[in-house]
Length: 255
Ligand code: ADP
Image 1 (cartoon, rainbow, N blue to C red):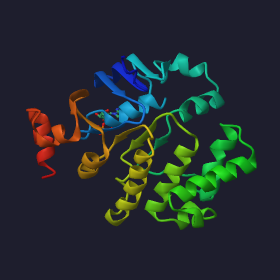
Image 2 (cartoon, protein in one colour):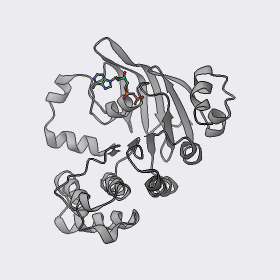
Image 3 (cartoon, rainbow, N blue to C red):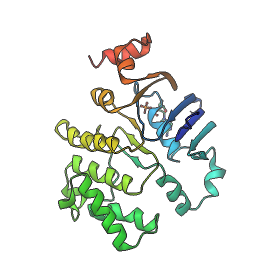
């Protein structure tokens, strides 16, 4: 039987003006799979995730989650949607950003409950129970009442993860979520991701943490110049057995 991927990206293309950033990208993620995208800066990794999360229009190809089209091909598709509609569609692909993007005037708990109430339509009590559950899962039950400014970067990012997973996305998108952190805070955030992976969360992530990518991923996709240049098991990609010069050059920077 053919396995239908949960996330299916086919022949995706995207330009910013004359700069062709994604050149017919094919990438799929099965349910429960953790797929990591690595590659040089400027190769289109972030743009790819942003297309999946409706944050950029794309020009051609398709993106499907569970068979339904996601993302926007142009502004007219976007204009037909209300903000509420859009928030609901976006919640299917929870995204965690490099820069945390927490609401600064809301507590950790309120940052998590906001979408649960406004987008998922949960009652205040339900939203609070769900938020506490997820804050506990990322080790922050004692910080529920703290403002982002009262939290370390690692704690803020763990709130960001709790906020995304509390919405029960089908796929979690993680965009360089440790890049803004001091080195000593990276581990606590990666531990949370490792736990989510062990629990079967489907994830597509971009990271520069090569060792983490090797340990946490089922599959690694190497992007270069807007294309999937190589992909395979972590061992295959990291061993350089692929015979791909660009991959070899990229990996040599981490050795
Ligand atoms: P990566 O995540 O691999 O570093 P990006 O997806 O951020 O790559 O960027 C790919 C290319 O797209 C780069 O050349 C970048 O300058 C360009 N780009 C990204 N976002 C925009 C934008 N909003 N407007 C114009 N160009 C952009």
